[in-house]
Length: 197
Image: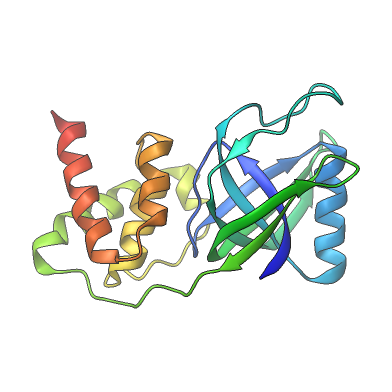
């Protein structure tokens, strides 16, 4: 078990994925400062209900999914508008065992870091999913992340497809919680068919 800060967001990030975050709330600026000082990371977790930004001291923290991804800061930059932009990369999935907040309203979690998925190859009959991913990563916004993708690895192909496809967050969260990369590819195949109907 480990105690980590939690960053609730309306999105799902997988291990290996990258995400650019604009930080402006004091609690998160403090969190980023502490993470950089201690060379530690924080957890990104999907908001199930509630607001990402707190508008007042008496506002409830959002309710979040029980599984998220532990991230580390890989780059940062002070923007012209004064906001801090950080690039984070997912490292490992975690399961929340307990959560609470500190005095400045930062959400903290007692989490269990989960084992990395076993690497398995993409089956030949799922090659069209690799083609779909290759098409998606041509978008400028995705190219700007500077990702290196192993297109032969089922876990990586499934993770990146889940992050980039315009699917509902509930579906993406379900994909994150799956432990078997081959099952995830099958579910993504069904989802792509639904999207084409």
